[in-house]
Image (cartoon, rainbow, N blue to C red; front, top):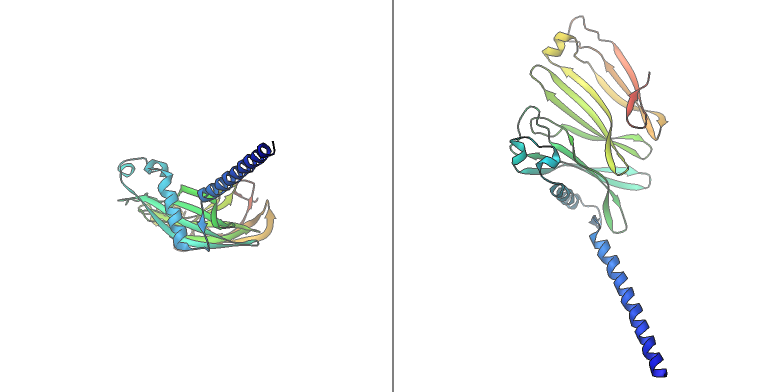
Length: 259
């Protein structure tokens, strides 16, 4: 009887050990399957990781290149730049990349930008917010001429994308602002910053100077934006060249002008 009880105790201990080992295997397997970059931040490793995300995103149609001849040519992925975001709780990192088919050379040929923000975790870095292939920006197959960072509020960063386009006698420049919301990057503001060329000059639509900054007023966690611009152009005699200051406020979805 004592031997039987001892055997039962041994079986119970073995079963408990198997359960423990199975749990440890599950945890380690789940951890190894989690996306991220191990160890200290490294731009090269982050770039490789993001390019892998782009390759896994899908074919040309998934990036919006759904018309011939661009829907049937190979896609190429490039890193645009790396940015550090200084939150009060510590730094994050942003990787900006772009995707385009090649050849890709036309007036309205805009590559697709991707934004991936990495946050630190116990073992390294993992994506916290991302937008893959959803932002057309640039022209003639080239990416936008500027991507920068601005503070939109306390622990709130805006990704500022500046692009331009030449349309045969009309030159336009635009500025779009994206920010991370609920794990995605959303466009919260869009401005036309410049209009030049003889077509705009003839119609009196050419623009003068344009500046943007933030104000300390906070609404929904976002600073107000102040835009200072000058209507018309000094190159056009008799044009309206008055200065205009306009405040924009976040309305829960995007920035809207304050009347």
